[in-house]
Length: 247
Image 1: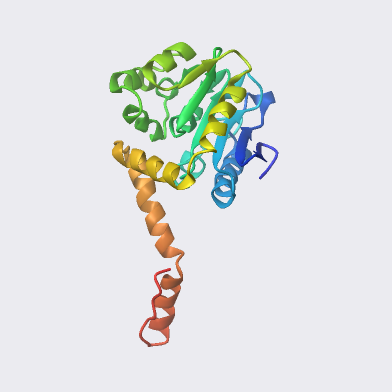
Image 2 (image 1 turned 180 degrees about the vertical axis):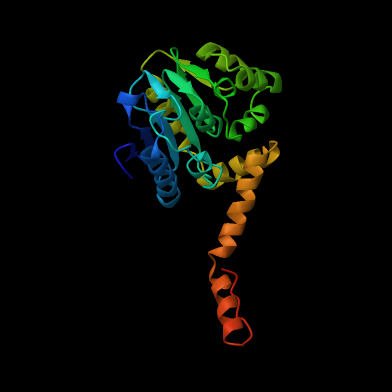
């Protein structure tokens, strides 16, 4: 972890906070690394559910930090792409949610937004996009997703609620409290059932090309890091039959 992303665990609920309020929680290299570390920590921890939020109530995140020259690789730190997270994730959104930050919300299971929340994906206006946002079309009505990601218009919290991007709207500054209420209820449910149902729900949705590619790369990566791969290489070099163990 690093100071740009905070991880707090209480009552087996993890709160993961993008912590750059002076830059409206814009995403730079430190945020990328911090979020990736947070998801891995969540997977390895006893925490049952996670809340993802941004520091303060002015912005969940405004997406890429324009002072950061490199283009963020969102697959590395958006849950469900390179890092599979089977535990429920709740987005707690206050203020602006722009660009790549919308992809983070898209991949969460629930979303609580304050009444000052605003969602927009302006990449088509700016001449660049990574493609992960295409999965939004399988999560909210197709025409609404196209309106949001092709026109780049601003969507209010109320409109986001109406189209199913947001589960609940709360007064300004209460988004984390609202997400915590959901998290406490989820933490009382059976973890194996939650994981299974999250998996099944994910499999029932259409996959964008980037999601499908990330799933394939995770599978390939697990094979390439396996003990069996090393066994296969060593047995070949030593001219002996391999002794594979399935791990």
